[in-house]
Amino acid sequence: MKLYYRFERRKGIFCDEVLSHIQLVLNSFKKKGVIQDIIIDKSKIRFRNNEFEDFYLTPSNTKRKSLECAGDYSLVCILIILILKIHYREDFKFTADCFVENKVDPIFFRAIKYTNKMLKTKIRLNNTQFIF
Image 1: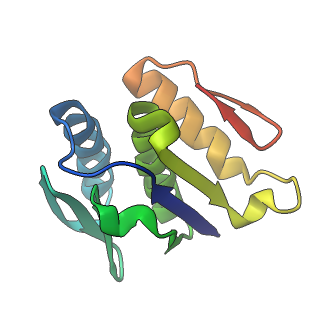
Image 2: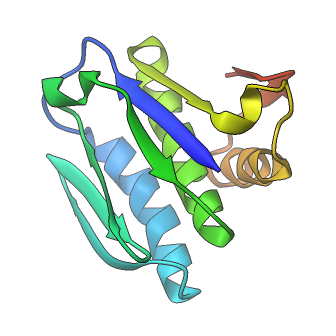
């Protein structure tokens, strides 16, 4: 699966709450052996499976970027995307290749359930639209 994302009208550093939520997710999946080499600070979020995934809250991220995701690594990537969407709302856009045919990969439902439990949110999915 491919995920596509971009930040709009955002620059600067990640807030402490975003970093805290993402750290929880990454630490959990590192313990399970899904990811390695976590680097998190106010300017970047970085982790890897085979290759590094980088998230920067800078103007250079206004271009659409893509993530290649498979297996449990997909869940990690989707969780990061959902956390960023929760915090940055309209300033953060994302989609996935599975949405093209109006089909949602079941991994999205796992990610929503995990996020709702972990962050006490009430995210729902209506067709291919996330409702926060």
